[in-house]
Image (cartoon, rainbow over all chains, first blue to last red; front, side, top):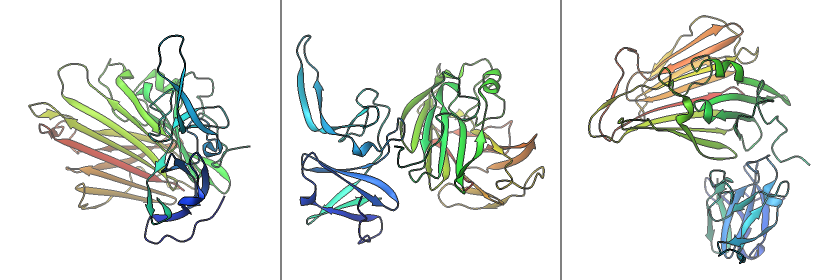
Length: 125
Length: 236
């Protein structure tokens, strides 16, 4: 876990360079004492509180992958690679782009806004 | 390995054997935790803060009491009409630090209730918003009752009614502050006067909050208007 430098302005915290986080990867940082995972979701940077709503697990340490898509009976389609985060404790899956659980959309991970300025990723917290 | 927050039971006291689904929310820094039961009227059924490495329960309720009577001390977000099942509260969504519940009336009423709760920096925030979507004014009022544990470090005095310091609030119309040793309760309401009473009941304190003073003359929400009541409790 890395400690970011001081914010350049209130509430906007630099956490990494864009080149530091490849698509499908995550960097866990500490922002204002909050543990936050910063994901590169196919070029879009997403910040998630590192707490699973199920049993408070460090959800951002889980694998990122895809899921099965709607399909006719007997046919299986795989898609959305790099967009689905699985909790390492109990396997709860969350849509990184929307924040919701795949099985119960009412349960969500907490996300924070991100901004990219030049090559720097900022988390707004 | 535990999570980055802190080790707390999945339910508050008295709910361990219950099959009731409780929505648990936590302070992202691990300083506090609260539980909500949408199937029992959207109640807050527990609120604990961390003190010196231990967990102090500031607000709690027991399921057997709640099942027996919806008007018994608890965090009654909205008191349903007599004989009306409380199941009309609907759990909307939650994330680790906040949850939202809605209430829709059965019948021709055009009012819509939304309760949101969140914890940040150990402060529990409850907000209730009532909207009117009808063509005519409706009468309603917002009430909220909390049971605060009489922990020595939370509330030391057992005086019957605490004094109030009322000041104008630009955003909502009125702010009421209660200052006690170790607890800070703030109520914001729109647009009428708020009242806050804290009274001892046994070893606990009941905090009753309404958004108007005249119980027999509930306020009117104009068509497409709304009323708002928010409460923040910081007992760290």
